[in-house]
Length: 128
Image 1: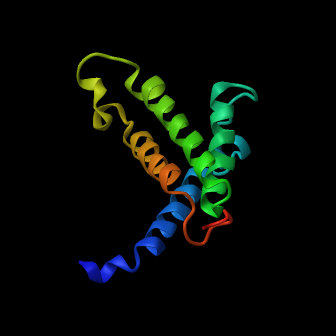
Image 2: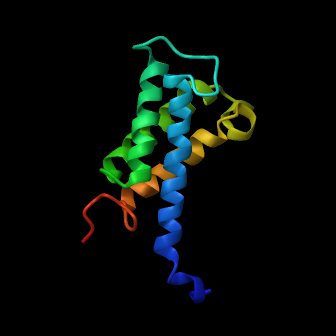
């Protein structure tokens, strides 16, 4: 599969951009009410989460301060999983497929990978 290796940075950039845009849409739903009836109270934990999702997701998509934004978003998703999905319950509710935390876990690890790798291609970050 070395044939695809030359496209690795392009595929990574597309993953970074799409993950960032999809994440920012979650924030737009919470903060701006886009396609959603629910808006958390200003200053609440969910509101701050929405701000992180909106701004952090856009920063990741644009490749602006990518490592910092991705690390912050990864941490937010770790908190989301532990606090809102798993809730430290013993037994079956530990598993993401049962507690509906699959997306939080996936975002957490995708953003952790992006935090380690940085913006790479098509990024506003200075590349060396």
